[in-house]
Image (cartoon, rainbow, N blue to C red):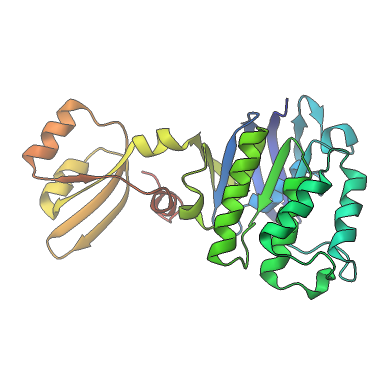
Length: 291
C-alpha cells in the first residue's frame, strides 16, 4: 500500500499563508498531476508530504502513519526537487551510492542503465553538469530509488525535446513494470496530459479540482458562433472562458450536455469542440475562473 491522506493542512510562513486548509487523499498506484500557477503552494505541499517542513495545522499520513519524523513512512516516498541539494563536489556515481544508503530498495543496475540511456557521465562532479543534466541526474535517482511514491517537482527543467520524451517513456515503463503512486508537478501540461490519470488543481492556496482527467475533459467543451447566439446559450451555465472577435464568440463550459442542450446548439448554429487540459487549466486558474 501507499495511500497518502492530507487532512486540513495549513502552512503559514510568518504572515504569508502558503496553504489554506487543504484536504486530499491520494490513492495508491495512480499518476497524478499537481497543477497550479506560481506561488499556489505546490512545492510547499510536496515538502510537507516528505517532512522537509512542518505544517502549521493538520496532519499528513502514509498508510495511516504520520510522516513527521517517521522513517518507516518516509522511506516509502522520494521527492525530486527543483533546487540542487547534492554536494557540488561529489561525483554522480558517489551520489548514487550515497542515495542507496538511505533507500534499501535502490536499484543501482537500473540507475546505471538509465545513465547510459540519458548519456550522463557518472564520473563527472555534480557542479560540472548543465541545468538539463542536473535534472537528468535527479530523475535517474528518483526512478532508481524504487520508492512506492515518487514525487517530481518540475522534473524537465532544462531538458531538450529528446530527453523530455525519453523521461516520459521511462516513467511509464517504470510505472507499468511496478505500479506506484506518482505525482508530477509541472507547468508543461500539454506534454503530460496523456499520461495523467488524475489532476489536482490549486488556486488561492487551496485545491479547486481533484478529479480524473477523463471525467474533467468529458464534462468540458467549447462552443463557438455568432456572439448573440453564444450569449443566449451560455446563460445560467458554468462558463469558464469567453473570447470575442468581431461578431464571433467562443465560450468554454464545464457541465454535462443534455439532449435539450444539443438541440439548442443545433438551433443556434453553434460549433462544439473539445478542450485541451492545458487550456482548461488556464481558464480555471485565471482571475475569472469558474462561475
